[in-house]
Image (cartoon, rainbow, N blue to C red; front, side):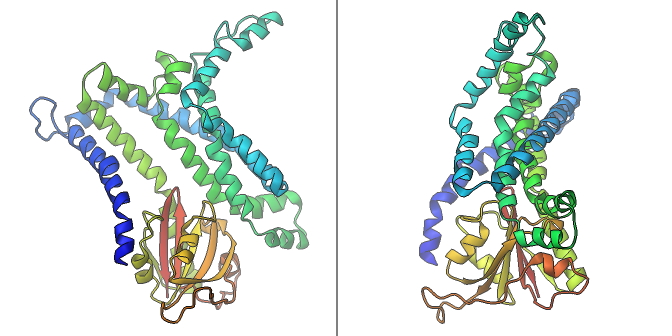
Length: 396
């Protein structure tokens, strides 16, 4: 245990230097006067002038996120249906643009959308004349969609891949049409991926400034542009810090949405199964706070539910840390906002052999919670992760 704590020291130092201290500086400047250094809320009150820009940033980011969803869901579903070799190839193609500089990708669209750019040159040769393709809201949204579309496709693909085919087969056997299977089974089960993708697109889009600078104009200024100008040209870091603080709170709200789903899942299991739930927020997976998980698993079992990759996720870390043995791993239950679930049983280090695992009857969230008859299998601990955060809950 002592060695494990020592291994966490570099991570703790990193968090202090590059997260806690910068956040402290933002809070200090946002809540102090630029001249006297005394506490004040004037910086926050002064942001009312920029409310239209805030609203424009949110609207454009939401619109870009929805477009990414409309484009990304069919792509992710198609990839999930391909053969493994084809899947890996298509994943590589999706991630390939991310290997290129964000700046260069955006500048490429400037060259295409300019009045003398590639697209307008083609239109002129066709007799349509140059169109105002750049310095518009549409150009800014296009830049957001192009740069952040992979952040939508990858979470969706990860969740769709984990959907249990037996559920689809059961729906077809019960007479559901393909459209009903999609709307009543596939779409609800992929809900966590949709939520995670929307969050991963919206958060960087609402805070971007380079896309709006290169593809937009003064009429498409976003809040990121205003924050940058306060530090670079207006020389008012206190107001810029106040805006950053509000934007940071908005980001925290977006990334904490999965906490709400975890609480709803706990309440629903309690109401339908009569199981007492305890929810614990796991902020990090590496290093994993093993003691917090063990303390939460009072009944000796834990269920990990997450909306990100199976390998390296919370459930995987629980099994790797030597306190748990595998019970089962299944596709998720979208109605509870869970991307995937796996049951693990806590084991004693004295009685556990190096390669042993304790098989038990697999627990499927769907079977336990969606049927009218409650499942008799108890689920002592529920763990959820979303947007990089892990949320365990204990059931008695």
